[in-house]
Length: 478
Ligand SMILES: NC(=O)c1ccc[n+]([C@@H]2O[C@H](COP(=O)([O-])OP(=O)(O)OC[C@H]3O[C@@H](n4cnc5c(N)ncnc54)[C@H](O)[C@@H]3O)[C@@H](O)[C@H]2O)c1
Image (cartoon, rainbow, N blue to C red; front, side):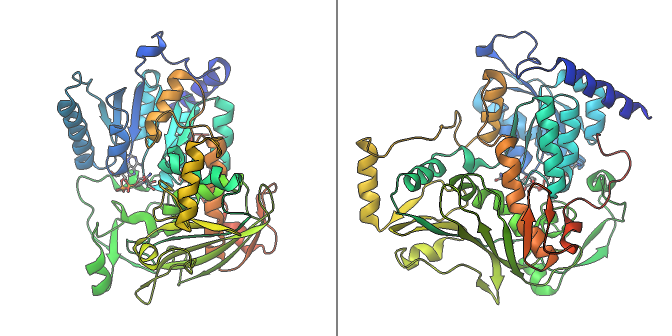
């Protein structure tokens, strides 16, 4: 057993026996003034705003990024936030390129870990944190394989830590309002839900690799992490696609999204936002069957567009269909049919959105988060707002302690107890809901899902996409 493995095993044992509640790691501070010691893995990109969400209220003790330039930039930007806010001079975080080294060297100083890396390292980094007994806040989607989501969920339950996924919509008022309106009969009986996004806005669909020299600032092998070792590459794109690509020439940074290994396509990128309100409104049910249609895929690449139908069992509402549209077909947005009550202009402007269609009206949201849903016909919306003021329509959902700040909300609950809005009991099944669509896309067929057996029952081939094919030695924490 190597030293790192040995250390992990010992620490995990310690966590299991002594880690009984959310505040144990807070080193004797009183609750009101508690500042957590937090580490951010994947410090640049989304990790920047995730850091900013907590840096003034807590101590960022470590920043980790496999790209040394981006790591230093993340550290500078964090200092700037403090300088601009006139907040006390912050402690200086330790900087690492390998999160395993961070845990080896300073696990004892860390209370919680934010994971904002590309999707393929969420599971690895979060599992290392959990095995060390740390609270975790992981960006969406929690993982890009259903098997990993299930493992992470179980490990977090065993460790009794405070968990969160970074889907900010779950902390917002709008999603709660839409659920309350529907449950209190505002649009009659819920019949159908239509969801869509203009993503991918990055190269996606079959893409060839072009081997080039790796930039000196990037540790490509650490970026690949548990994936098989391979030379650094960029994309070999046709001229038109290359012109449209506003980001990096290869997978690092941002453009890993269209690769099954590293990302989870347009659905995985946006599903945990756009499907979130649906998942909550339908009572957190898992679909029984998913139909899929898409543009071409490969073993490596997700499609440029897809159309999915999730068949939802009856629960709080009658059995119904949830449809998903993404991307463009022949240069035109691949959107669902507009409900006639929604004005054409309003619908046209909505690059992502959702329609909850009832027997007596429709709730429309033209963004990904269900931040400000609107009821059509508008006279009904006016009446609903009056009824809310008069207390005739009641607020039944628990409100977030820190709306629009999932990282801050997570830290708040570590200090004060209680559960974050998108804790793993909610966000693991939500991620599974989303990833089931990818299972159908990758299998290029309808899949029937037995959630208890974690298995596709109408064909054997799709089951190969449930768990990651392999892990390089030295990366899995258990
Ligand atoms: N909630 C949201 O609104 C939202 C928005 C954007 C991205 N995200 C999510 O955040 C995550 C990151 O996305 P992004 O767009 O910032 O990607 P990105 O590639 O732009 O940034 C990721 C950063 O992580 C670093 N990194 C890569 N592998 C690493 C590793 N093994 N260890 C440490 N650092 C590593 C990269 O160098 C890079 O700086 C994704 O899961 C994405 O889905 C969420």
